[in-house]
Image 1 (cartoon, rainbow, N blue to C red):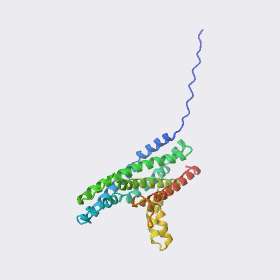
Image 2 (image 1 turned 180 degrees about the vertical axis):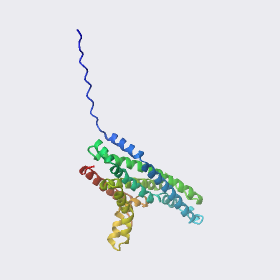
Image 3 (image 1 turned 60 degrees about the horizontal axis):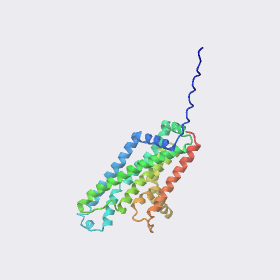
Image 4 (image 1 turned 30 degrees about the horizontal axis):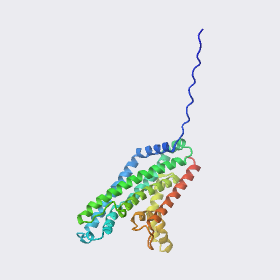
Length: 282
């Protein structure tokens, strides 16, 4: 008599639990696999180095031998080198802004956003992961760009015996501030792109805010228009690393107040993105 052994039932599959670390890893793969990311970051570094070279050569050649600059106090010499080193950030912010928009708007144009939101049903963690990855990557690239620009500028100014040490807070902090601003402008643009869901619309809105709005306000012959300019994102952002003191003066805000203004713009953009991405269909 043959005994029939009942087949063993397969163990139930464990329910996969989505972690924020996994979402971060996914967003990092997306970011580094895009050719636009590689080209954008390469352009940021190239612009920073190129503008530092042009600026430093212009300043060195305009000093007629640099005897006065060489005999100037150390803090004034450091300021000359720093001004040349962070000059490229003004142009690099445009590239960072475009990249920030494309990071999210590109998914809407290709339809990949549906897969992203299906994998992350709560949606907000997906936006948060994009923000963290974009911020860290842009900050690191910006730091490489500004530090590289500093060493290039230092080599140019060495010809007239003008020197600066990167270990000095008055030198390193502006370089750090320039990299931080590039990262924050990229995150702000990400928020705008998430709200508009259009590459063209997002890029136009962000570049209009950076380039057009300050120019228009400067042309308006009214006190209120000139009073508004320091509170604009590009104005406060550039002052984060060009202001010479952290204490507000009668003519300018301090570094920390400028940073708070920039954070306010970034927070508003990301809050709008978080609200709209939960309410609207992909």
